[in-house]
Length: 232
Image (cartoon, rainbow, N blue to C red; front, side):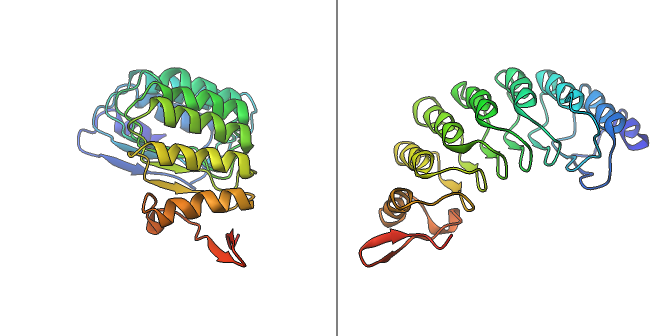
């Protein structure tokens, strides 16, 4: 709480990481409130707070903050028990945000409907460049919502992280197709999903064609008896 108060008058600090420091609901709301007015902080991490409510009050406060904050470019909200409702609240305000470039929502409980809401941010073609949704529950439908938005409406996103989301071949192939279509989409991380043969073939083709740099992904398909597989 004292640190949140200090941010009210601080004019120098640009990067603050208080993740994994057992922040509670009151503290999270205090930081969100301060960020309504702070004009210097550019990167903020408040991963793994200690929350005991399922109402997502804290997410609502951060969504409202993002509606007015025009300097924050990087926000990390890992392990905040964020669900589809929270994802929708964030999306409602982020479609108008002109500053945020890196959004980290990893290790939450976002499912297909939440991914659909987040895809609206991509469709609005906001400045967002990096989107981390790893270790959520978006599945094939969620991956397809995101892929369609990237392929048809987005020119800014460079990196998508969707590992460990129970995505099968259909969803992963949609992601590969989006990467094939959009030159700005350069980096994708999909490890921990169900890498079926069609997905392995699709990503192997991206790597072989030079469209996907092996250094910018976390899978390395290889061929066994004429079939592309991934060591997942």
